[in-house]
Amino acid sequence: GKKEVIDSLEKGQHVFTFTGHPATCAVAIKIVEEVKKILPQIEEKGKYFLEQLNNISRDLSTDFPNLVCQPRGKGFMLGLELRDSYKNYDKGISSVKPIAGLIGMRCIEYGIYMGFIGKQNEIIRIQPPYLVTLEQIDQVVEVLKKVLTEYTNNEIPDSTYKAYQKYALGLGN
Image (tube, rainbow, N blue to C red):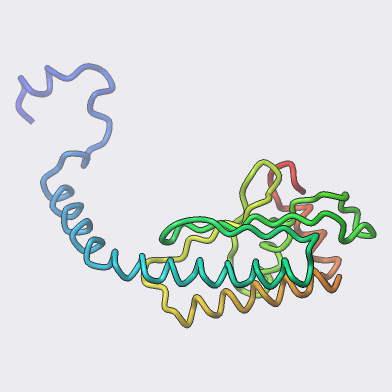
């Protein structure tokens, strides 16, 4: 660069080589243009996904009133809070226990990555890629239903509990 420009920078002002580079900026502009094109699809699929999560919540609250299932989110930043107020005492879970981490761990065993977050791992984090199809959303919902059914029927394998306790971060494990 020009000496007067380089000499004008204070220590730490120029940390990243490509930060303001014209080629980098051109690529960033193109990415924003492309994402804007698919935003309506993302919004539509996100609403569909949230609707499916609300259906799961409604079904669970009818059949298992002690299981709290609260979907939330917008677009492809979705969450599902899961708590159980009485199940699985024999597995060492207290009377009111967040179970999202355990459910997420079991979903992983079925090939569907479900992150879990929160102070006690009480929320399943669902953030699919922008190009996810409705069929793939349905597949995730089916696995989630299957795992929640396993949980309510006390059919989660001991190996899943052990994996959750070994690998989960946070206070909820």
